[in-house]
Image (cartoon, rainbow, N blue to C red; front, side):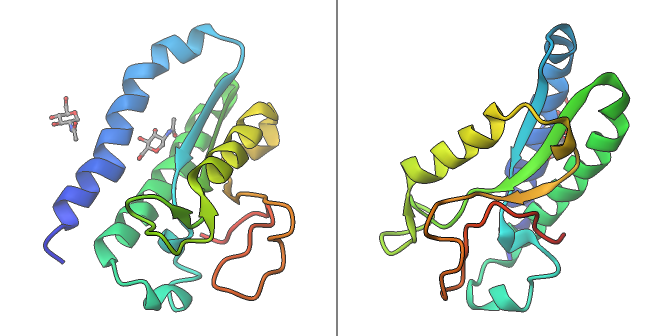
Length: 150
Ligand SMILES: *[C@@H]1O[C@H](CO)[C@@H](O)[C@H](O)[C@H]1NC(C)=O
Ligand SMILES: *[C@@H]1O[C@H](CO)[C@@H](O)[C@H](O)[C@H]1NC(C)=O
């Protein structure tokens, strides 16, 4: 697991730095929404299921990102922020490979859809994307738009 430090830097520290840098600007606007891109692979409740995808550093960094999202969401809730984490699905990207479930555009659109909803009740949540006809598939992933367990 020699890439743990790198994963924590990219997936946790860098996200934290960017968010902190953007906070003053976000405080000026009406819709204070932050979507943190996480992964179901970082879910501790699903850890056993995802043992077939071997990348412990990635999973650990996404679990840390989830915790940061939750902690900041609670901290900034009274200022009207909506901060949540989303699992973008298994996408055909450099990381996901050619046999992944969805093309990158489908995953990106599903996340934009969540961002466009402007729903304060998403604050502090960890959500799955919703892709019609993928709600109840039998593979490793279902895309039902439901809340994911931490
Ligand atoms: C985050 O910010 C700290 C403090 O400015 C800096 O030392 C660190 O290198 C930054 N980390 C990343 C990954 O950019
Ligand atoms: C998103 O998660 C990062 C940690 O990776 C955290 O620093 C950032 O504050 C989160 N966004 C917010 C505003 O919660």
